[in-house]
Figure 1 (cartoon, rainbow, N blue to C red):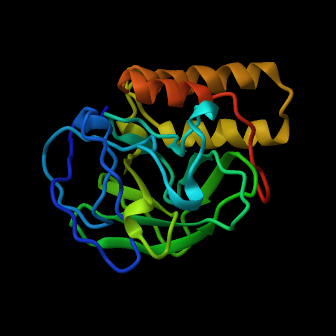
Figure 2: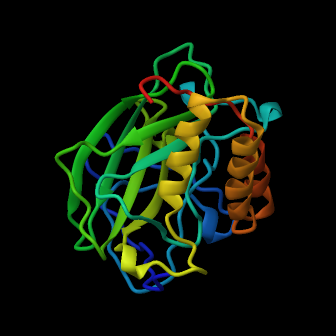
Length: 240
């Protein structure tokens, strides 16, 4: 796998991009970003915030349910894609009494916005959902991109909102290696679409579980429990 690694250390928020609540007792590799959507790129190991650190406001989920907002992305490696316009999958734990809005954004390697923030209405029932890049945006090959999903839990108090973030890198086919942790986003999207089309197929279910369990060891014990609990949750498949 491509070894170039990145870590953000400074963020510059823009209007309505929520901050994230820190859990200071957790290791830094699983703490969620609190300051917004802008960051600087450095040659260090990539660390992604793929499990919600805890939510408030209308995003609150009772702890007994043991489910959190989760991004289907590696935590300590850059997920890769062959696609110029890849898709991203997330798990939403919310049964919506109120409409919850999220924003999806991406930065390029030069610290500039790659796409304008996309506003997303989260599904009304808990389950996995898909976010696709609009057709006008094309990922360049051999560049790293930093994506963000910002969930607006309280428009009047951004400290109650949630931000998940991760990394994606578009490769060329001749860069594929047998032992690479490659094509994560392509594999997730392909399996998710197949499961939407045939949700009773046990072989697809097993492949899905195997792929997602491969991330579990990258997380601390607390986040690992939340991650493992979403693996067998239902799909939200409108328009898939």
